[in-house]
Length: 156
Picture 1 (tube, rainbow, N blue to C red):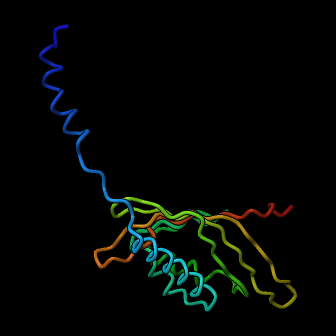
Picture 2 (picture 1 turned 30 degrees about the vertical axis):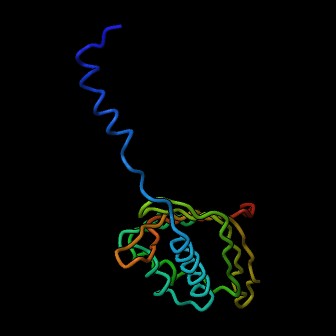
Picture 3 (picture 1 turned 90 degrees about the vertical axis):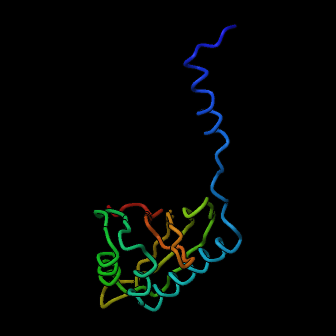
């Protein structure tokens, strides 16, 4: 079987692409840093340290809360967090953290209770989340995309 001149020219390109190095898998230190960031987020949420939580996002992050438009940018995310009702409880349970190079994702579940206020009773909620993180030059992993949604049925 005779090779065409075109296929002979493409062979080095295909071989070169096949031999390119893959970005490194996340190290155990990267995974530990992401877990620590998630723990800090939960603690900050409990104590209403909204500025500290906003700092866990990139400057151009996109936050996608349920039943609302996306919130873009760290400053807008901080305003959203500040406007969220006080909580009497908040927790995150990471299920999966993975990634390569400077890009990682985290997936898990959350539970929270919006604190009772006046005649409004406490409102529990639980659901799931996915976050996409970018490793920063200093080694921290900031959220670039964050979405969560409830497992609770919609109110009727």
